[in-house]
Length: 353
Image 1 (spheres, rainbow, N blue to C red):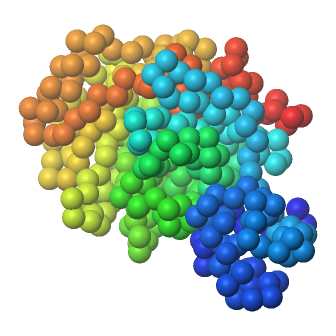
Image 2: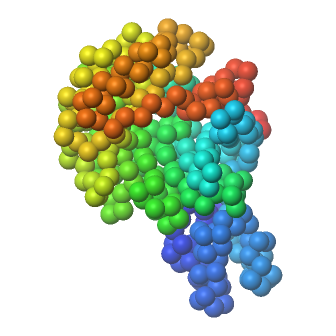
Image 3: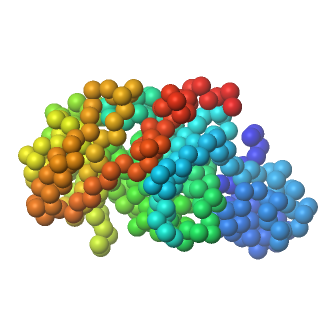
């Protein structure tokens, strides 16, 4: 883009400050900021209360970047899986899940992921690149535009592609922009346990909610399926979680992918309960979304085993939800769409688009 400054992915105050030197009256800068940060304008042409000449001049200096929609796949449960194309040809995915007037947007923070959890297709695809603030906020803008005016309230979860806390330099500005429109208590950042990132999140003035991808009750097994655990051991992770500042009424979410015969025994549930005792918490139990191509050896447990696991947690006094993967019929579990041979090609082949 060269001399063009990107306005998406910034707070209203930042947009106004950038635009201010190029408008004739101070209130014009606030108008531009409002169009982008509140009204989701996709271009200067939409800003009908600005003089035509000013719109043309601003378009010469600034960009309002929109991701391109490459594919939208509706699922039987009503969730919509999006594959979005970025300016350099990289593709990322995000998901919109609707329940009446409420929606949850699952956003990506990276194109690909370097963490390499063995049960995740994005991990199998390998490291991509960090998404910039405009590319993170752009996912929200794209989904919102498609669902308005039917949706009144949006929750955001950073559970799409990538490890958000390995991209704090871009996630920080993106969160600041998003949390002007979505209350911090409706924004969740999920991590495989990146300790410096958790400490960074703890230090933010306005904090989103924290979710931890746990997936095993002990260091040894966690390390088998989550290599990142070698660098950030489970004991250190739990210490950081216990130190994490929680607003009143907030809880830490622990996500636990159930893999048959590996981490799905009632004794494992009891061990999890001991591990997180005393932490205001809820546990999301997620039966594995099987993928014969990317992780052929891993199976989803039988429904009875899932029930026993959840009941064991509940009997230990924990709040538990079992999340059968939404959108499994279109491979909408995080990272599974882009890796599908029959669906989308991996990003490396997308660059020609």
